[in-house]
Image (cartoon, rainbow over all chains, first blue to last red; front, top):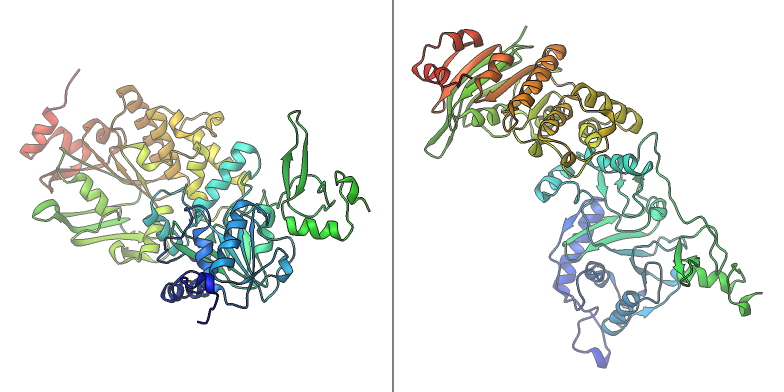
Length: 295
Length: 256
């Protein structure tokens, strides 16, 4: 692989050595061949703590080519610590172009969100996954959960949803909402809000999930059927805050609640900063936009 | 009519130590078989072999399935055996905590088997859970409480409800009254006897408590050192024990 940049000569392209990338790519191919199945891989130590996206970084590193344009988001935002540090990591070790625009990126690494802008066929979405096993807190034995996946015994997943309804009157699971992939494997979509669940299915982009500490990679090939689990009398509902974005006025995007003072004041803003910024640039104005922005 | 369960020369050893050996019997539909013996006599090993929790070294356990007739459970594939375990069979553990999910409410515990076989209607699942809690004398307003909020006797009744909700035909019970005080034991036995008769269940009950088998079991096997030393109708064995060990066992019961 050619990679010339004098100040990072000590690094192989995209940080990982080629044998490691080969191992990760094999895991990715296997994961794509069996949608939703958790493929074990030999996760490497990365120069960041577990929980900061070591799995996602390794998957991204194995996917990147010098021509790629990378976007990194954390909770939808391009400018948070996690997103900034991972973006800079790849700027320095791979020298790839980076962007904050969803439509211009070819590889998007994300933590906890799917971008609002629809993805396209030439994009790869890489998720950082803390806990890949959807049955983890229901069945403590990993041997048993693997057996349950192998034998398609997923009744227990519904026990969790049952508990939600009996306790809260509705399915209160709001993130990491379990889905069934291609009629076979039950998968944890990483802690994305359930608002994003409908975007998982029939997506034109490749979706890859990397869990570094847990050493698992799984994937959704393009145009895969993804069904959120539910009960006949309590159907799945993609929920969001009952408000419009205070800055751009969008009523269809996922919103963050921001506490603005000590007197209970709050505002709702788009969690996807690129989407919000693009809308404001196009002249959309929300109720609390800065006075100068009013068109 | 076929026997529900045919056990043929089942043997299991742990290295050179004998767990159980040469055990054979037939269990007919609606029949309750008691297995008694002292600690270490091989009762629990035998039960584990019968219930598919452990693979016997030799012998056959032939179960009369609903759709395919008699099959050797050792020849079943693992998914088939686990399916049987969730539908036609039930296993009541001595310690309720082994058989319950302690982090899940009572209703969820009872509903788990229903959801495992495909029930996806919350209202129906909950109604059946409440119905079954009623049948084991747990008040309907306890349906959302976790098992840890229940007394030992209630936990055991909850475990029974959880096992019987899918209408099994064969129940394996390992010391179902162990660890409970005598008045709770009596109520639980009463309840079990009612359910067994009402549902026409077949059951294999392992216990060291002769009172339990006297009340519940139609037939009795006495085990010692991994082998069956005496078998027969319960009343016959208990009233007229033939084997020296059975005589000892019957005469050891404390009279109040």
